[in-house]
Image (tube, rainbow over all chains, first blue to last red; front, side, top):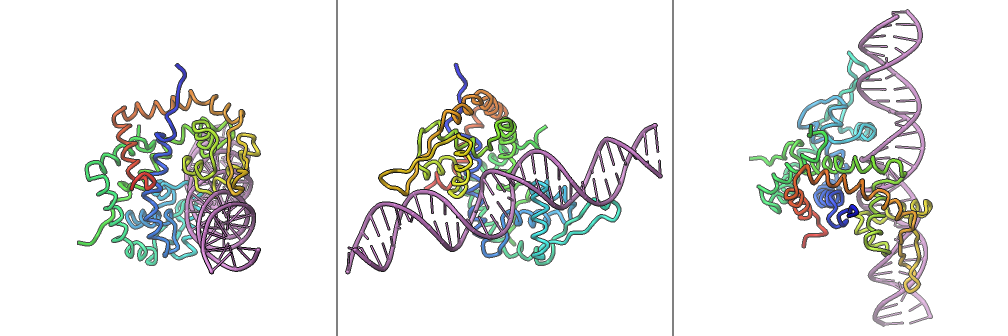
Length: 145
Length: 145
DNA sequence: TCATCTTATTTAACATGTTAATTATTGTGA
DNA sequence: TCACAATAATTAACATGTTAAATAAGATGA
């Protein structure tokens, strides 16, 4: 029996893309008037949650590749959303910190973002929402052994 | 009680990104020697499954935005993976068809791709794999009412 | 039939994803 | 201390994602 691939209508990669699009669309709409992208929103979220971070940790927690983060950080610095400082011990390292202006964007949109998240949780139901997060985590190479 | 966002470590968008990365990484590795991208692979998959398609349907089934598909089609035409013909009735419309060279890439990698898919199915188990696909579909705006 | 609306597609502009090469700094061993 | 390996970050080059504007062809109604 020759091997077969699932129909593209039941393809896991395509399902993941579409789900991501479905989830991000309302968040992008929310951010439209702020002029920041969903990636920049993610950077702000992580910095707001964890405080100042070195670039590697930030990239990891925001799920961004290094070259992307370099460019995004440049943009965000110019916008005054973050500040970047070199480590005096190891001058290769940098630390990135959220500014008041950056924190204000988070504060101004937390309520709406929380409503969007709550909407998806309702769509699936609490239990299935958690199930989904668990299943997705098991596909994440950074979380598996 | 002020609204709160979930920790970024339990964020649905980030979980979706990471899962997608986990799933696509081995597929990208597989395609590395062919010189085609995962998006081009998706176009070939859809064309191979459904036969010649008009551009709109192809974009929809491959989950690509129109401007992306325009560029991708140009690249793939130059590589000889697809052919593009105008509809003589409605000269706005185009049809895209896979070539023998394109089909050969599918044929040459079906077995390996099927093994990769089977690996993920094993990781989660059949039942949970199907559960995951169903939950993801419920986040897809194109599939909901 | 002509102005206009609609639809299909492309182009433009900017941001990010991805891989490879490069630069800057630090660590190491002869 | 000097050549060299390792690490952190950036740059480069190309492809795609995203939104808005532009083009082209077809449909419509006065």
